[in-house]
Image: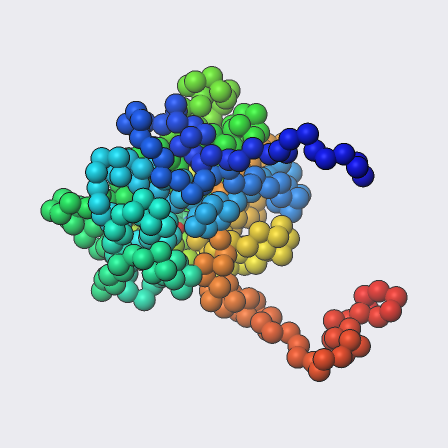
Length: 372
Ligand SMILES: Cc1ncc(COP(=O)(O)O)c(C=O)c1O
Ligand SMILES: N[C@@H](CCOP(=O)(O)O)C(=O)O
């Protein structure tokens, strides 16, 4: 161990995606950043998924953003521009994460946040975020698609900025995840796997990958693999789903706003958009948590479930580089995670003992020479 003090700071502070990539973003010149220093999220090597696929698999952990999801990348951009253009209030429809993110950035910007959510279908953690950040939350008797129709209507009729991903500035912010991945790997990956709901994110990644390739920052484009929940898979069946249903409430969306952009990303990359069941999603959530130490929410685990499904079907990844985006933090929806845990046949609380060291050791199967 050195006895010398370090010469200077070991790390510089990450400045947030606008300041890190401003010259690559289409936002009005001179827009001051409303930022919580989002982005710069970990790209974690997965020994588990690499072993299964024969590829080098990395997990892009977007739950490490300030409000716990990838939405923050888009929200810093949309809210910065809205504020710069004089908006005093903002609105979004949400399955939870967009509202949590918008509420936090509205607080930072000093704007009034108005949230429209499908009644009874938002995970408790996300709802708490929106409320605690001071949003006015309106519950709608309907699904996300109804809420988005209302949010669009409100922004057309009243002076409120719409910050869902139909606002193109949101995609500008979200495409920075592709830049970060390419910067870290030194090139674009061969394959990119991610969950798809309203379809803004797959569109944003594709925008980012193409921009970097066109600028000569990368030599190739990845094949995009999107995954929807089986009960909410309009892009897979090729038509809107009037009553989408899935335990992965984040992606409980029947008529994605960025439909055409997502199909373009799929086709231009010679990729695919397929579906996975809720059982596969919850199993993948547990596996990722227990094998790689990354706890994600169910909607995020659709990407991991999708990769596992492709490997089981014999899709060949050997020798390639694969990035799997996991979009939101597991702590946002502990109820569904624990439900999935019990459904897998395990009791949530394993054991209760008296305050006694040996009783705890016995319950844990520990002996003085190791594990029993
Ligand atoms: C955690 C999570 N994952 C994935 C998605 C899907 O992203 P997108 O709507 O951009 O397709 C969402 C929101 O829809 C989400 O909240
Ligand atoms: N999962 C999203 C749905 C809205 O998506 P957006 O990207 O269009 O804002 C959410 O968290 O609300």
